Every structure is written in C-alpha cells, then in structure tokens.
Length: 222
Image 1 (cartoon, rainbow, N blue to C red):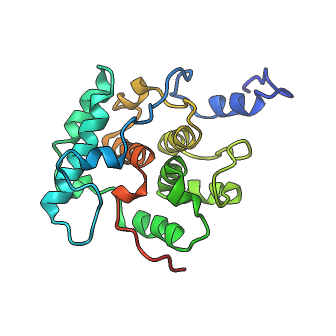
Image 2 (image 1 turned 90 degrees about the horizontal axis):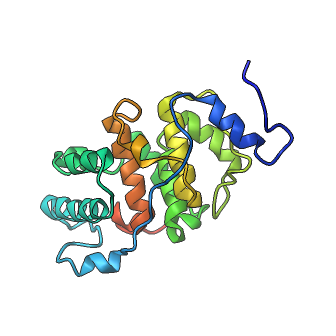
C-alpha cells in the first residue's frame, strides 16, 4: 500500500496523482508557449488562415511552417529530434485530428456554442482538443468543464493507462501554463509513442496559435 505523506494538506491531490501512474519523473520543466502569433506567420509567405479553398500543398506548407517555428525554440535533445522527424511525414499523418471520431467530438464542442472559451483561450482549446480524443478521459473531464475553462483542482483522473495519463498531464500543462510534462519525457519513445507524440504536438501548436490553424471559422450551430 502506497504511503500518503501529504494527506490533509494542499499537496494531497498532487501526491495522489504522482503515485497513481508509474513511469513519469518529478516535474521540472514544461512545454514553453510560443512568442509567435498567426500574424507573425502571415509574413512568412505562407497561408496563415486555413480555408476550404486551400490546396493540399498550401496546407502542408503551412503545417511545416508551424513545426519549423516550434522546433526553432526547442533546446537540443531527443524531443527536438523527434519533432524534426515528424516534419518528414506524409500529409495524411499530419492531420490534426487523429481519427474521425476525434474530429467529430471536438468540432461538436466547438460549434454548439456552449464553450466560448475555445475561441478566445488557445490553452483551453488545446486541453479540450486532447481530452476529447480519449472517451474515458473525456467522460471524467465533463463534470469539471465550464464555458471558459477546466477545474483542474477537482479533476483527478482514475483508471487510465500510461497514454491517458500523458494526455491528462499535457492537457493540464497547456490549460494552466504550469509544468506537468518534461521535454525529456516527450523525447522518450518508450514513454510516449509516435502517435501519442503527434497528438500532443498538435495540441501544443493549438495552444501557441489558436484553433484557427485547424479549420476555417464556421457559423456556430448546435
């Protein structure tokens, strides 16, 4: 039985999370936010707003610029190497949504109009993008999601595998700005496989540039 040293203190919830899933070390440094905006990217001679009339080549060029900007801010290490390898993947593998259900679930949240914060807070949008990928995580998150954010003080994941816990940590970091995933963890292929890394990477891009990078603004419909 795992000992509880922080029971009854403000650190009780954090201790419980750290003990629940093995494999992740103490949190020290998180994923940095970008100093670039979509307005900056417009000056890079690329398409900076995703439109339905865009060609496949234009979309791929835009995606490459986003990855290049991100990679340029990373320190040398295995995470940077993995990001650079992802730049060489095919267009099909570069899609922001990992599958049709993920796309349907997230766009439904966006278009129903119940969560206006998705349009104004890139960190909130990135967290919702991640959590909506996993049905089990999303069901646990729902009671703690409001119009403008997620109550992480009350949201504690249970019964998830290592992938689910990594998604939760990434969502929490991008939503709060506090470190919960180390760059070394993102660079470890045994902890975070390529498919999961691509999902987290896309959420990071959303947190840096907003939801405008993944789809054309559409009229809200419930």
